[in-house]
Image: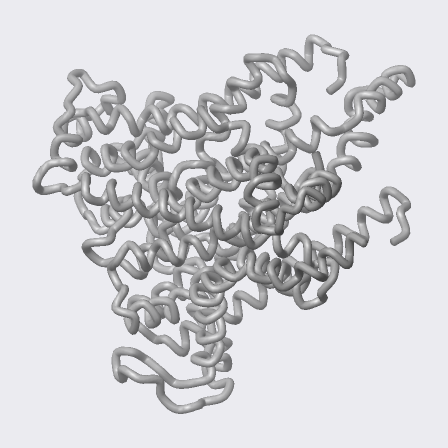
Length: 301
Length: 280
């Protein structure tokens, strides 16, 4: 009966998604497919106002020979791996120690999530001041210990470390929030049983907490890997890719190609390449999660 | 969590939480102090972290004739409010239809996946075509260009969230309304919508944070008139000298509303963040 009613009303129900679908078609689907078609043509806005001829895969071939692009991919990968790892580990530690309903812990959690809700560009400006070699806070603190602080954002290696640190500062709270929610859902009986068995805290962590959190860990990994690989805002406001190309992440490079040089076709090809890479990573993670979960819980599905 | 509270655990917790709080609060405090510090003290050595006198000059400057921050602030407020209303309204509406139809029609289930995909590709893909589209529609440098783009990112999130909320409503609730002769639209507005208000609140808050902070797309379609606060803040990057006073004051203006917002809506914000990650 239920099914028949829904079918009877299907016409009306189909109208419900219409406004939303129109907005997404206009502002996402159309641009995304337009960029796909542009990636097979030859169009630089500086030389022509209309799209040029069809060039096949030439832009994609060019991408693989563009050393700056390849370098940018490498920088993004380093950023992604380092930031994600630290955020997941730190986020777990913070969640482990702040989960609970006491007033103090609740206030602490509220404060700890603040970095996450501020604009990444504002985050960038804060850290640009902290990391300034002459007048910055960090080097001032170091100098009270008698150490001479380096030029954080001016040194190629330190600049990359610094922008990774900035991302960690802003997004560890995200991992913390998710892990807190995951931890608070572990049934208390499991802990009680472990206590009766005389299990140590470390043992409980290894045999109960972490296996229980596996799906949650994957969610955090999924979102942090995607977002760190595509980072741009905080780098735009701190190093702008420099010094040299040391913090030139892939999104920033595409931004340059597209909106500074107006190399529309080439920029489109680059952005499709990294879209495919990101989506492939996301799918792989989701599949791995399903497999790992079933092997841990012995669920066959 | 475990009831056993060994001394070691309590001590470790106190130290770790205290360190985390310091790491989070010090940068914010430094920013606030810099926004009221007089010019000369930025360059004093040893560094003067706490200003000797408090000046509100930078705030006066950025809001004054030269700064025009007021109009950019207004832009950001308008964009955020409209994006929240548009995303939440169209998203909640869409999710209702999709939640009911997705088990019946393959193409609806596929449409849901495609909508969710928006979260996972880099937004740089759409920048150029969207720029061209807005140019052709003569919408460059208008708030509409920013609003449409932000809504198209907000809607997928709202759809995802609301489908979850709708599917938790017992079908009996709707069936009884159906027996009273309510058509689908009236059931949605009178019966379903009031029940999912917590979900609506969560969706509204998440979209507001997204739109208020969004920089990349906004910066690509606005140039002068339609600048939002993140675009304005990013402009300070070109400064070679130390222009920290105005930069700090502008950053404070963009940050403080979110702080206040989080304090009052934390419960919903956390629900929005953890939704889907953990099944409550």
